[in-house]
Image 1 (cartoon, one colour):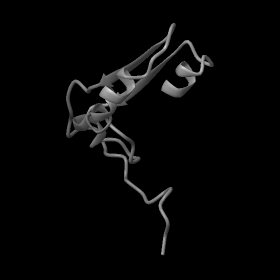
Image 2: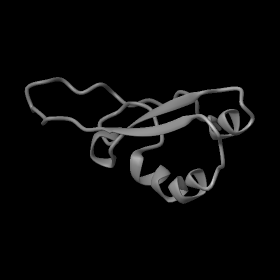
Image 3: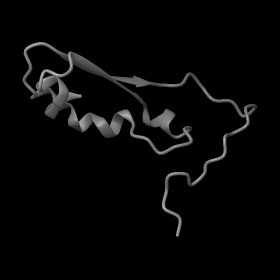
Image 4: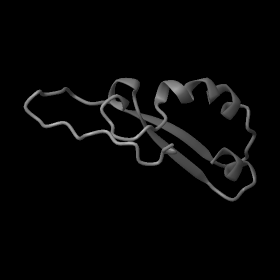
Length: 80
């Protein structure tokens, strides 16, 4: 998205990520806010005349033992 803004192809972008606490409960391995945060300085250095790039962290309110867990699988991983 930063490259698209720099090249004038995009006016903006939003990246919505789970927090590390919420990512634990997701079924797939995806990035989280803490993993992306070290790149903020790099993205801030991208010069653009007109554009915006935002990163939003999403957190859960709580957990419950009454809700059945979704089983984790090996989808998307190389099976040997």
